[in-house]
Length: 414
Image (cartoon, rainbow, N blue to C red):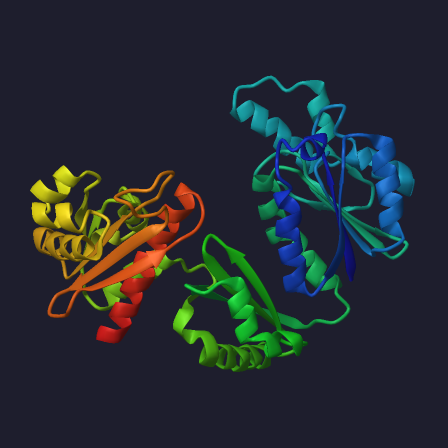
């Protein structure tokens, strides 16, 4: 199948919302082995939508629409498609009952125009909307499949996953199993990672390798097609092994893993606890960790030591260190990590101190960062780093680097 995704809504063209639906659907199509060659965005205008559909008909045999299924006059997706396909719109009784029940349940008056949402193309397979009112639908005419989905992502995504995706899988000519795996890396840029495995990327066919950078991390999505799920997995295992032989030092997890979930997981596995002294990050590190269910088993606590007074009087950093070396220094980071570990009676102490900006501090430029890691029975390590970007980027990357350093220390120690 070759697909085109058409998003309908003037709010998209005005920049009021981002077209996340197209991103989601393209990811889904990639997993299904369906080619997506075009994304189209068109406003709430019947003539322009008609032209977009006519163009799509010349280059795709699967056209997926999002938006324009609501009750108002500017919701005109199915009406326009019905006119082009010369297909009548009829009330889907089950959808109408669901809409009526929703209004009754919420003690709201149902206006007449809401019945419009229950209209579907005659003969179409109806996709139930379990998170809203307007149903989706699928119809195939002259070897082109038209799939209509609602615009709100909270309605569109579950509808597609539960009803749309299985339907497309049944219609694919070749029933290949598509297995995907995401490898997650930290501490290496996208360009460097690509350079390290350039020959794999240039020679890819099956499995495919798709790099993606974001938020200071890099991911590789590996996708393999095979009639056998077992054989597809073997292909992924083989290419993963080859990749990690080159860049495994930067690898930390798979799929939906985050650096913070991996830290919690590894602390639990090794029966260790952690505490943090946060100057630069202002509590961000512990906020991310404690947002994870079960963090209380391994997170002891911490101190936000944003001022030198707190560093000196709460975390017992000698005044001489703060005067001579400064708060943004290796000696300060070392003592912060050691003292917060002792104060909170944790196995591991982590410290963050540095300059997030917008101005320099203690004569040190923006982006200067020190991360300290103190572990019971081991020599304290301090990582001297330089990050680019704005204040928020520097703080976020610093917290993530702390996670990555803890993971490496745990791996080396146990």
